[in-house]
Image 1: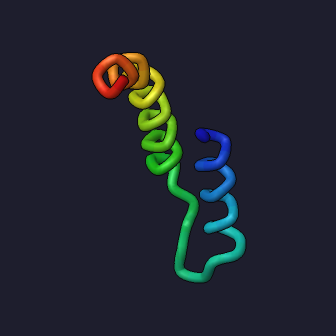
Image 2: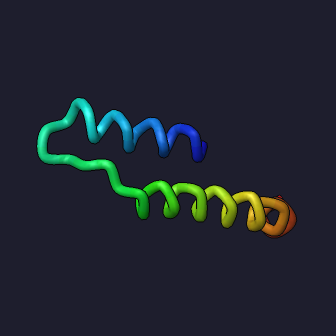
Length: 48
């Protein structure tokens, strides 16, 4: 998923007018992936 986020940043920078490459967006993508991976076991126990 994080690789997808990085790829989208490059696509935005090259193909979409008015959009730019943002390092903080990549950091946010990685942070979201880490939070998901840490929370997933807990959510599995809660939800079943």
